[in-house]
Structure formats: structure tokens, C-alpha cells
Length: 229
Image (cartoon, rainbow, N blue to C red):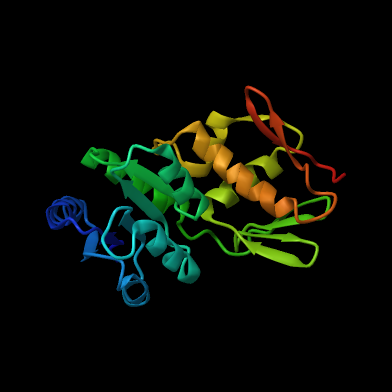
């Protein structure tokens, strides 16, 4: 069965170019000119990955991303023509898996799609849990449980936290977390790691004793404390 790539972009020429290119690599490509029908398309098409433009008439890409995240954990790669890095940061904070500024190289987009699909590929069932001082990470469902509260994590958040929890009290560099979180094919900045660490910390801070479980190793990266405080 072919992987379905859903392209949501108001640029007809770009949609056709991407559709022809990705079809040549065996993907089934579907297109939308705006985000108005995104929720319906997700339900009907069950895409493997979504390519989403941030600048569109009507609902912009961030609004569409919010709609997508309410209904699905499908990988979303944002396209942005804006030079402001805050647009990218906001997209990542809202649940985007990756971003690519326009204009971009088609081969780079293909590499990012492949990396996103690998990260999101179904894993073998019953993989168990990682547990540490009141924190439990379900390796099958990619969920985090603290006390009686369970949190759904994005694929990148799960990959980053599982890497830290598998190496308790051992500093991991930002480069290592980039590779583990996004895959070696992805081209993302150190800032992306910081954004997802911030999101994980915001969860931990809601629970007494776990506020400082993820520690910054200045000039290097992060480590996960094996003990609660």
C-alpha cells in the first residue's frame, strides 16, 4: 500500500510540481488549496504525512495545524515563506514535526518526508515501559504518565524523552537529541531541541517533585535525572 501525502497549499503550481515529483517516488499524492476541508480529508484519506503551507488565505497554516492536532498525530511538515524564525518555533510548539522554508530543494523535502515516515512507523506491540521515580513512558502508545495523569506526546517529544530516560544522569548533546528525535536525514536547528525540551518541561512542572527532572548541561545539551526532588 502506498503512503499518502496530503499537500495543503494555495499555490496550484507548487502543488502540481510536488505532486508530480512525489508520485515519481511511489507516493499517492492528494491536494487541497486551503485548510477548509483539512479535517474531512484527514478522516477520509488517512494520510501518512501532511505538507502544510503556513501562509494561506482564510485559515492560515497554524490554524489548520491546530485543527489537525485535535484529530490526529499524523506527521506534519510546515512550509513557510517567512524569514522570521518565530513562525517556525510557534509551529513546532503547536505540534508540527518539521518545517522547511521556501524556496526549498525537492530532494530535501523528500528526505524530510522519508525521515518523518520512519519516525512515525508502527512499532512492534508490547514494547513495555520506561519507568523512573514516578514517571512512566509507554513505548507502544508513546504516552507519558505521571501519577494518575497521562499525556499524549508527539513523535519527536517521545523520541527525545525516551532517549533521555534510557540514559539517566548522562548528558546527551543537542546533536544526539536531534538525530534521535528527528532522524539523521532531517535538517533542523538546535533551537528545535530546545522547543521540545521546553514542552516536556511544561508537563513535568505540573507535578511536584518532577519540575527539575530534565536538566540543562550548559554549552552541551540535556540530561534526565533518575531521581525526583
